[in-house]
Length: 91
Image (cartoon, rainbow, N blue to C red; front, side, top):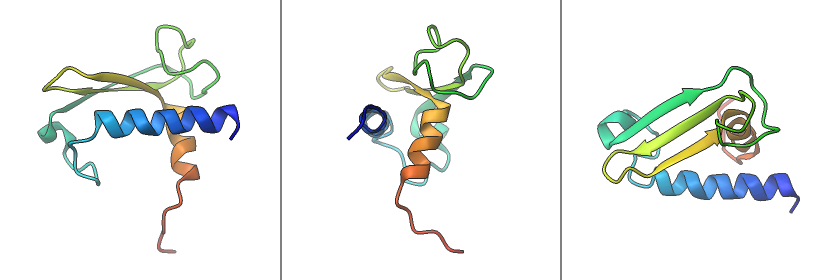
């Protein structure tokens, strides 16, 4: 596994933790105690997840309202993670 795959695996684990109590389809996450913040102005993933140190790359912050658990995710890396997913799609 190369470094990028390790980072995506770590991101997937963090996503599972922060979204553990949500429906799988993420329908109405606000009604499931999730708040989201989006920051940044360009789509890239060279500098990481922390919006305070990633030179304006777009990030998504997800917070579980009941315990305050908060995680930042780089949007470009989230897109890469989705692209690598082995999902069955109707064509």
